[in-house]
Amino acid sequence: MDWYEIDVTPSHDLDFAFLREPLPEEVRADRYKVLFGEGRFGDDYPEEPKVYMSKKDPGMKLGDFIGNTGNALVFSKRVKEVMHIDELNMPKMEFLPVWIHNHKRRLASKDYFICNVLETADVLDKEVAKLNEVEGDVASIEGLTFDERKALKAPDLFRLKEEKDRYFASSRLMYYITTMVVPPPTNIYVSQVAVSHKGESET
Image 1 (cartoon, rainbow, N blue to C red):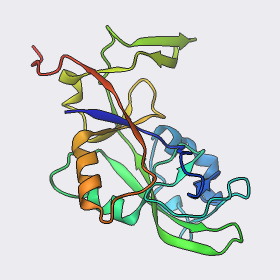
Image 2 (cartoon, rainbow, N blue to C red):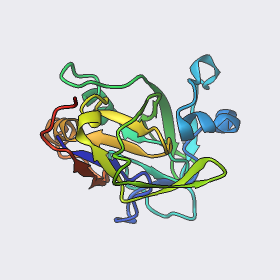
Image 3 (cartoon, helix red, strand yellow):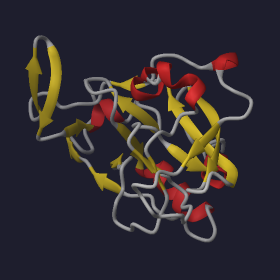
């Protein structure tokens, strides 16, 4: 099994839409819930969840992932549907609809969702990865490496225990997204994570 980090701020193709504020205005005070997966919005989430493209980012094309500065996983409806198949081991998560409006504040699509991942996973090989701490909190990680013996127990999508604002997907999840979404998904960029102890069983 391999694992990939999901890029939440892709800028490879500037024709794609980008959101400065992926959350509706009514719940932005609770953005930490999406930033760190610390709780559900539930009934506090608005019935008309309007979000707007920024004039700072002229792209208007809607891909299967919408880049943003709010550290949110904003997926298309067709990617969301893949996440419900029985073959996957998905985490506890909350899907929050977003109605994306263009630069003229006209509705562009209602078929997008924030995936608020509510689980973390302890997968680091701490003998390889170096944790840089500031006042007891992890500020950065050098040499990011997963221990396969730990990672195989994790869901197919998760936040890193030491840095909850980072998202990782298994090769199994990426396989289903790239094969079941037709035509192929757009604007989804990932980077493969180094893995140690491949093929070893945990004693």
